[in-house]
Length: 286
Image (cartoon, rainbow, N blue to C red; front, top):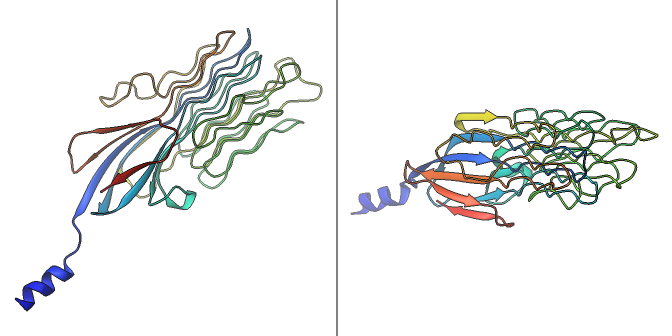
């Protein structure tokens, strides 16, 4: 009996294999007759293994909010999986978010990829694997940072954990500059020149995705906006894609917010479980 007891005491917890599919939030559209659409969020898939009893935290970001009064929208929120608690150092898998559009020719760009896409015009640059994207122009927006997109010049809100704030940037008269999408490292907010150029500044950069030690990975960048049309949802043909998520918001006088993110996972090849945006961290107990 003592031998059996020792074997039980030394037995390791069973290993659980978890497949993930993550869609990040899209950037919001710009509120003006010449407002442009936001970019869609990135898509990431991968497989990770854990000991039974492990706790994971999941962030499902919101789409960037729609701009108001001629201003740009907010950058989108990332979708990510973390070990135990939400922090940059605990990141396991992240899909980067799309940026908001600007005005007069500069749509938001799709999020995701190892290095996020650069915006257009007097732009914000995409986040990388080691730093947030910078801004450009004589009057700079905010640079992206870990898990956070930068705000456009003259504006308070980049793409935060759960999406951007009410306005990506701009003051409705001199410059409307797009904000960056959140990600492993966020994209930079756009700047503008002095005096403001006729295009009111550029669009923000996309947030980067992160694959960590995951296997069987996919890392797809989102789609850019085109005119007032927001970027189309990324990998929307996947069987687990959740309708209405991930796309970029529409620009123009009737502009819209970007689509929220989504996390879909299964344990040991079982049924898929969907985690939608709630505005709070969500828990997976294995």
